[in-house]
Length: 209
Length: 103
Image 1 (spheres, each protein chain N blue to C red):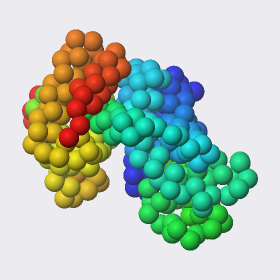
Image 2: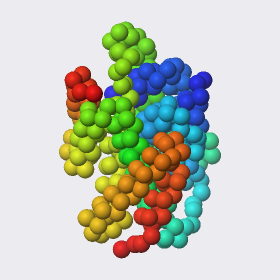
Image 3: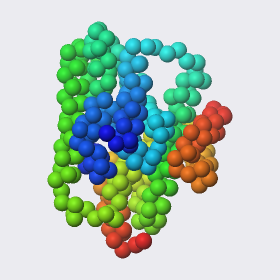
């Protein structure tokens, strides 16, 4: 709930209205993906870049969704809604023998808590006196810190799939990061994404242990 | 609706469809190599670029405070000690504190 509220506060400070926070929470419920999308969209990133980043951050849901298919309702609309509300906390809370009714209730509660605390955060942010938060204060920093933490954590958890030797894998990642750094200096922070990801995929995917 | 919120909404809802709704209805059959590339290599490529983007953006705003605070976040994430919220709070405190004194 504090994280949902933090999202609402940061979104409101980026001039999103409470109903925009509500809509993004309802239709774009992706947790960390929402934190990633906020500074990127404010920085002028396009749809494809945003999609690439948020889909990658949330790619962990693919195996979660595949392994919980049998718990979902049969009706297509119910099934789609229930799948959309899948989150880390719900996945961790559900059991293999839970029926569709239980799964729907668990996911709905967590989903609504996230969405409503986001709206609450947006309201709180608008209620705070502007003087408390100076114009030169970089309010986006916590979101950047969240993004970096998520990126590094994801890399840490996936490094074993790249190469068994951790040091070699770290060197390859550092080499790819240097390449991405070169591209961002050359092309700028908006247009480096697609070539950056393609180059990194090519470099990382060239050999397998 | 402002353009940034609209772009974010479109990307996030498409993401939800791709990573949660489609797998609930369709089963994809990829080769082992394809699965490895899509499931492991490409997300890693994105996360490396994301980290570079964050560092580039924050160092551009405040080189010393931003650089130091992000370095602490990266180390804490690698160690996995105090979690997302704790690391973010600590880094933000350092960033705003240093930002008051450093360029």
